[in-house]
Length: 480
Ligand SMILES: Cc1cc2nc3c(=O)[nH]c(=O)nc-3n(C[C@H](O)[C@H](O)[C@H](O)COP(=O)(O)OP(=O)(O)OC[C@H]3O[C@@H](n4cnc5c(N)ncnc54)[C@H](O)[C@@H]3O)c2cc1C
Image 1: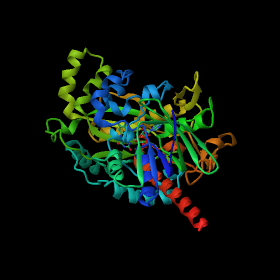
Image 2: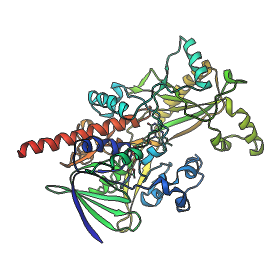
Image 3: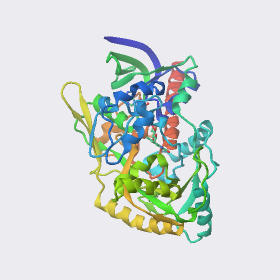
Image 4: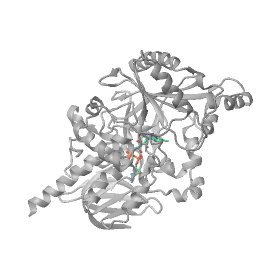
């Protein structure tokens, strides 16, 4: 069945942090805005559990951890958003996207980091201020015993090279609840249960082809402007398919990660605060730079006892002894979660591979260059010294990558080669090959800094939304 929906001023695809914050300035200005989204609902999570066939305990343990609590966030992605990859990457078709399970840790990118990503730093800094107020960013969440002891020790370490500080948190914030507020407004319509397949720009409008997740009915929506905010992987997938760019290698960015459980010597024998409540988090940011951006970012947090099973595969003593041992040590363990920035590289890429019929699969390949591996090892040796100086004794180092912080796919226009022009955006976030299609998520980023990305995803999305608003207002003025 094929239907033609009403025309909108702007359609936004995706309801994660990028989609919601791109839509907000347009809705506030009174435009007719529709949000087309996978939109799986948390309220239905229980009955959906059995519909998660591919969930398994992988080597990294990632899927397993999330299945129990938030199956709906990842549900159907394995079937509807197929990926073939040498690493596990998580995606979402939930209302609110991955922000439904995020931890809410925020940080501001430096001027150099914004420039390296390809974003206008002045505009983003203005948006940082507005977004921080809107989402009620909390700069003073109390620290737990570990945090207080570490901060005290760091103050005494006057010779320290890297800076330790408390990172702002936004808790509890879910874009899902923000959508509920926006739905009360008459000029906004939320269209869940849709999987956007492709988009086509016509002379006076953009056509969006989607099918319903339940019934597979096809729909076509028409809009004056389109903003893609389906998360970098899925925005890239929609664009590659829409322009029939099969087998075309484009960028994919995710961060190398060293996960280091450490025994916090100064906390031994001391009683930590209760498990309930949300505590502030300390981080260490590198003062050295790698290609213009901070060399690493370390989050320091207490071990979540619920994830003890995750450590078992890494301990070479029988499980029956390892688990009680871990349980005794757990209150005194601090995780040093070290992330490194990601840069474009020929060895890490994605491409859309055509299967039979209309089916296609996104192939993602992640491999660090030898140079990067050596650099990270060198940096880690220095980090270990700093951990020691804080009274943190590394028990184990687990090498990996981040499954949920990713970017790339669509290039930023400034430094791209001719062949990449099809897949690039201008400084306003407009797709170069189109006139009415904009990108609001991290797919246009040239690099991925080590810090958490979502505050900047929101700030950039708000900026892109406002750029579309300016275009619409300008068109209206011309028509007068
Ligand atoms: C466990 C966890 C913890 C995290 N903690 C932090 C943190 O502390 N700090 C931080 O900065 N970041 C954190 N993140 C990362 C953060 O959640 C993401 O950076 C952020 O959600 C990305 O926002 P987005 O809007 O670009 O994409 P997403 O949140 O992935 O949203 C994508 C949206 O697009 C929709 N969609 C996708 N494809 C289609 C399609 N074809 N048709 C229709 N709709 C589609 C989906 O329904 C979804 O609503 C965490 C992530 C996880 C999983």
